[in-house]
Length: 297
Image (cartoon, rainbow, N blue to C red; front, side, top):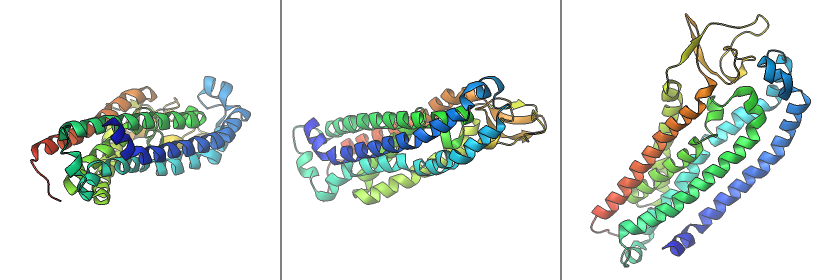
């Protein structure tokens, strides 16, 4: 079973390794200039350590203008869909290919029961996706390190590819694609059928539920005359007086925000949501495969 699973998925494994290698090369090239500018502008010293950015607003603004669009906007736009694409490309053909080409007659007529056949394949492929997700996250976190010191980790375009959630996104798309492949029996339609709900759920969680994973705090307006308050990563210094806080808006009492220290609790909450969806999808696929007595070509 292990050898057969490797033979069936080695092309996808090579593709994932190529993607990881390309990302690593890009990260090394881009991060070199960003780290050089971060050090030469003196941002790593007293500017951030002592003043939370209030003593070097010009340097921070120049750094953000030079690297902010590529690191925080363009990169996030690509990474918004990449985890889903990885998941559906790997998961879509896992069962659908057997049904589409009729090889299920051989695969499921051996001594290995269908449920065990699927469980072994899922264990191997899921393990590989976890390793891939962790490696991608490590590369991106290293690449973003200078920018993270100015913005923190809670913003939408930062939170989504650091910590635990990138791997959880990949696994969720993979689980949806496996289940869709069993139901649709065609690889490409299964990928589409899995990707659309995955993207919809991700956007709803990100923009509707994430700001309220924990009760926001409120801070009185604390903006010097030379630096008007604003929300998000563009504020220098942050309206709350602490870099990394996620400012959600303003009410009569002051700024409503999520403190930077909630990054890991938010990561565990959101990753837990997508892992639970993954478990539900894969569990449903195993149950359906066991319950269905026969298949037709």
